[in-house]
Length: 486
Image: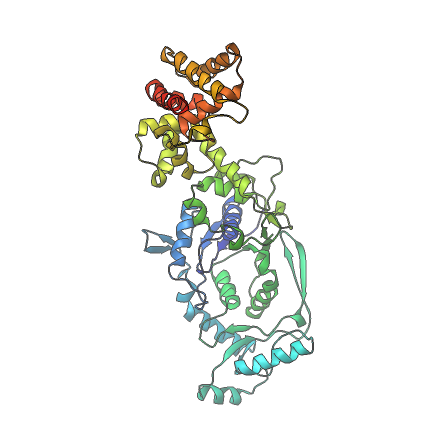
């Protein structure tokens, strides 16, 4: 057991929609906290105003709420455009915490752990170009590090633009024990005198995240592996303040099937895209949980409460995790199949066709096993509502003839007129008997019957369509096909 009350956070930047990778970081942070009866908080890191997207924070909060990840502190939506904050450590938007950052920055400057830097962008660009031409690491040359107090004051009085940099030690080693990757180390000389406050007065991510994590009592930072190179910078800031350093866990990258980094270029990456396409929150959560984490057995189906019980951060792999849309479809299909028809209708309320609910329930009872997403409901209903117009040539199976096709449909019509039990299993037996008794092949009968009932080459089996649309409509559609062939 852990000695200290566990507290984790998810801290997205409002630069767009919630990404699958972001959801995984949030989910793993949530599961870990809840497993130890700890707290999970949401913080919006919106200090990079150049990348800020209007309304993105609302979209992110909305997506997380739809996923069922209930946080203990942070902003939450009360309607489509308004939110409230809960918790004792707010505000939970970094843009509202600027006074806090400046207050702590003064402490670093007064303790000689940070310094003003007045170098112009032109000078820094020239320095980078020179270092690159000499194949040296590109880093600040510490020109302003040793300015006297009077020189600094004179420049401040003259309103010269400045940033504030951390005074990084000249040498040494930074080590930390990553929960997933074991020990990781960096040489201090490879770390720049990083900027803490930019010339626009906004803190850099590195300063703000350390101050916020400390003040909000974060014990475990769980994030993507792209942040590993930033960790030594954060550790140095913790050390400069004399604060306890949290535990770190860096999750593996999410990859496409070709092992390239998961990106918008190769398909949808935003959670809202999947919700809009009819994927269920529980199937997305279940699948995302398994992207890089392996349970002790081969079990795959987990509800959120079961994930809390079974999740183990130490069983997260180091290697990249493949995002496979076919696997997500499998999970979504599984959850739809195990829902009642009324639950499906409630979940798909925004993507249902205009159809009588009793008929829809009847269709779903028979066909929900074919659904990969809720958005396919309209597609499966169409067959039962009307027949698409089709050419008579489509009725004839490639290995059959017009004569055998017409013969099969006439025989089916004749049998159905007096057939009472319009149930798919009884109908299937009837059709097989017709084939057997009349020296026909399956393609002679089942193919044209399917087309006559649906107007499509690909549709549910004819016996399933017949059961739902009933005798009168079935005979009407079969008659239409017979007339096309005559």
